[in-house]
Every structure is written in C-alpha cells, then in structure tokens.
Length: 237
Image (cartoon, rainbow, N blue to C red; front, side, top):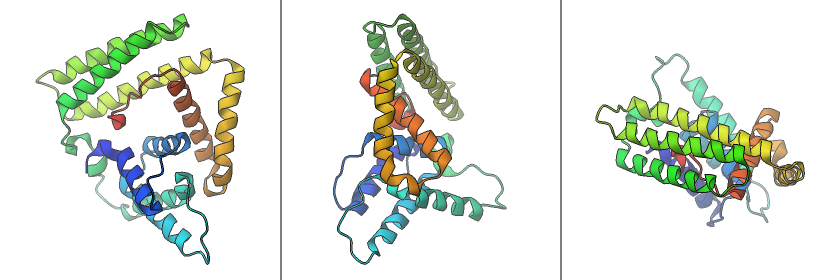
C-alpha cells in the first residue's frame, strides 16, 4: 500500500462503512492529519474505523448514520495502542507503511507536485497584501523549487524522501504561523467557534490532548483554505 495514500484510504474506508459517499468535512481532514502527525499507522486507523462502526451497528435501533470520523476517534486510538503493544519485543524495524524506502514512490510525480506548489505559492505571494506573509510564501516557493531540483538529482536516495517530508512540514508550519499572526482576532474567533461547534458532538470520544491538537489543525486548515494556499505534505499528492 502506498504510504502517501493515507488520506485516501481512510476516506474510502469511512465512506464504505457508512454506506454513502459523504464528503469529509474540514474537521474530518484535520482529524486525519492529527493521526498522521501522531504517527498512527494506517492499519490502526482502518481497524479503528471498522471497530467503531461494528459497535455502532450493534445498537438496538439505529436511526442515524455516523456523520463524522470523530465518532471513530477513540476506537482508532485503542487500535493504535493494541498494535503498539503487539509490537513490544520486536527488533525495532521501521514498519513498512511508514518507511519511505518501502514506498516505491514515483519520483517524477513528486517533483511535479513540488513544482506545482512552488508556482502556487509564488503566485499567492504576489497577490497577498501582508508583506511579511508574502515574503514567507516567496521564500517557501524558492525552497520547494530547490527541493524539486535536489529530488531530480541522480544521487537522490529513498531515505531523502523522509527528509523531504520533514522539510515540507517545517515550511508549512512557518506559513501557518505567519497566517495566524496576521489574521484579525475577530476572524480567528469565528474559525475557533466553528471548530468548537463541529467538535461538540464528538468530544466524549476524544481525550483532551487530541481535542487541543485537532482544534489547532482545524484552524490552520481553515486559514490555508481562506487564502487559497496549497498543502505541502506529500500526503496531499
């Protein structure tokens, strides 16, 4: 299974178990990203989704459908913990799903993806009003263009993909920080209120640190969307 299909595999499993092609919400995508950032294996997420739906379907009468991945959150964490316990005593080998060396990824596709994002950031840098944000976008655009050149080099190794993902994460964090600092307080309050509203029905399925992380992810994703900025992680290829 391709490592960078993490988001797609989760979306498809959730839709299949629900029985309809419900489009995932901003909250759902932010939750998937929080699982990815926490290093939860894809298999654990899929097992958790299955477990949550099996529990839901055993209820005496089911008149409603599961409308958010957040319903599966606790089951996903439990599945991840069970997998971790099962691996205790292993020799410390990197799981195939999280090792870039085992991805078999198409490097020309990655390079093209980087170039598209570089061009998109440069375009937005020329159109945005805030000079500080524009400078960060332009710098990120230049860095990503250079990363594409490095990836095209014959000496590029499979291990370099892991480093590439880390560097893209740092760039996106810088962009998020700049957007957060430049966004008016009233707009941030509106986004956070919306996050709280969407989270409310599912809080009992989550632990406090996860709720806090999900709120941050939600706000970051909303700000990127409002400015029409691309996601940089290879997970969004």
